Length: 409
Image (cartoon, rainbow, N blue to C red):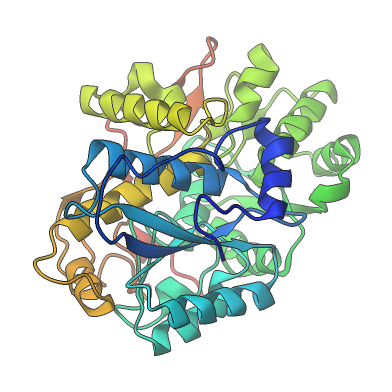
């Protein structure tokens, strides 16, 4: 594991490849004195399926908390970031290290391969897991108090995707996803059966993202003659390459792009009409967002610039940033020592808490059937406009997903 100012060589490589600078040499302390409050962060930022943006947003959040929020109770916030590499074994080591370091909470920066293996270890140590969203449906299904996710469980993405496509009148979708065991489980156990519940047939194309042929993947999708093509979940560059290949292959139907956003700038007019499903209001929705959301998006941009990642304003960066801001706000309200017990109690007591760039949440274990760790059952969807901006599909922004009407298993 590492602190922000001691970045691992593997992350430095990922940073150099993805952002050409930023992060590791930035002082995020804000000049605050006293013993830092150290929290664990689990981030999938190395290996063949790395999302370094998870870590970029966390670093920006550390800067923002210390420079704009006066830390946590006047103490500087310090992130102990453990780099996931796509293997459960790394997650086990990270979890054991967090336990040994006696951190009061672990923030899940959307690590879809390690957190499942970490959950029993952290649960046994009574260290709560907090995140914006889960990449693996394990922690939020555990007993109440194990984990808390501000934008709902893994099922939120699956149900939200099939619901919005069905609501738009579509019946058949062929979508690509990273070839990993967790992806197969996600598709077989959630996406396909939930699609059947709402009347849309979803087929998955599994892609090895470290050696992907976009034309082949696009042709495979189009061979299904779908009225929706695109992405369930791929890294940003892969999203762009696949969507471009679909358009070049003559597909003029609806593109579904998951939480990807980079393709909008990269593809220009070819991106128009695509549907995206971030969990939060994102920078490209700025012109169509409420005033308070615009202010928060400005703050996100400022923080990312401060740590050298002004070119990485992606949804994944935002998930980490917003989630850690939420967590810091909650920690600030704890009266007394910040321990695993006090953090757990504070999370359990949240009611109608307005999250940063997200919905109001209540973490009472009752927001999603069978998922005690879910704090929300709402979703938000956007359509790419001709000018590259995003407009919410529903005028109200967040909409109820009604998970009780589409249970599987």
